[in-house]
Length: 178
Image (cartoon, rainbow, N blue to C red; front, side, top):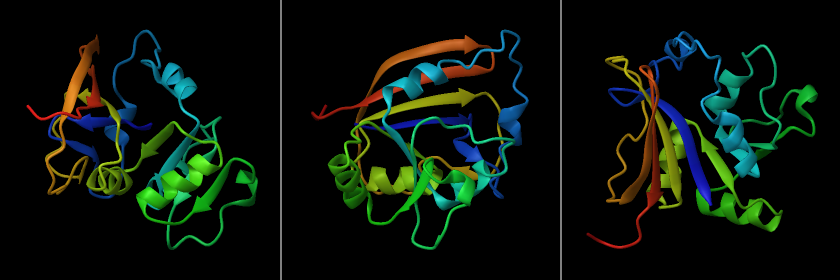
């Protein structure tokens, strides 16, 4: 199963035009909740992210992942040595990546990064999406969906109002036409 877990502004952007996600870092969180992130991480086998997302993660104070991370990139040659055993570069189109990781025993993949999410959607390889909407209008930025050019049907399983600033939508891939 390939799963998207991501936050989006009300107008559909996942980051500012330069990739900055500062707008996500200042959301009021009086209960100091992770809003279900740790429960989600327990469900997945590994993360697949693009180079730009990976480079953004490298700016964090510490490596945030306990699961293996595969950086899908055709341009990266090496990863920082301190990430040995934690992350590795993988190459190929989305279908090839799913097949490679499946052969290695990874079946529940967390797909992260705007361009990678869009490329997996274009190949109809996303089974579930958990999209947290933050009621902020950025006006411009990196779109979550971009130009998919294909009709993909999802069914809403659940919506959670976690706070006045966090609305989580759970979608699963709909196989039949309506």
